[in-house]
Length: 295
Image (tube, rainbow, N blue to C red; front, side, top):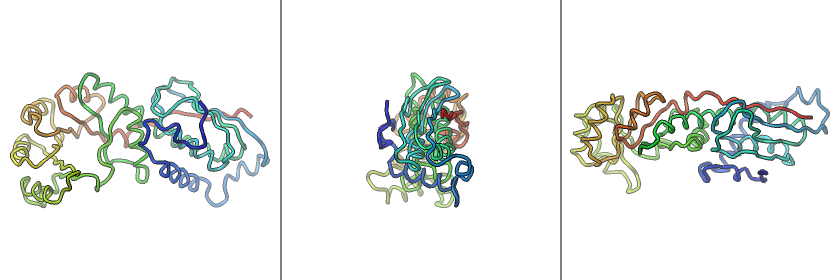
């Protein structure tokens, strides 16, 4: 597979990451790394016209995400760079798998190397961790979701990586949906009052979700008939089963708090619809990937 001039050919799933997001993220990362004077080491030691051939390799098995950003990093510094892709975002790769072959000016290859690897390592780590969660839910209806616990400035990229790993996205920001939490209830005075206020201003395409800590709170929410989704916060497995029976399909049920990879299979078996975990983005180990120069 050969990459085209647009990284869109490598996006998987299609449409989950806008091209301007890729371009801007890479531009900012390169500016941060190159600073005011550029890669002074390469400038000092490598003649300007020196060519290089490099291969990017996965050093562990997992799910790949971020190849379009890696390609963009090299192409922003040398548009004439020839890049051949050997995998697509969302693909499962083995240790030692070649991901990209890059041919072009040596200075540009070396200057873009760390930015390309940082994006690929970070996003592939998220995708790989997400896939480990998803694997534990096989045979159930549960969908794994990320949260807003993302790296500032990288939310769209990290949520894209979750999709590459087989997960789903929760809201992207505070303007996506109404999510009423315990502090909102405390300020408004009661569950019924806060839901009335929310429903009064919610557009027909805006969902209303509310967080509860107990089954009594869930009963109160169900009694209002005003919520679309109920977030079951930090409940144990027996309580989650009771909540599912109590709701009886009247609302969508989401679980949060204590959603770990070791516990997700048990959560899935309770019959809830979604489970959200901040760990997918804030605690994913970096995926080990390297770039080897073949001059």
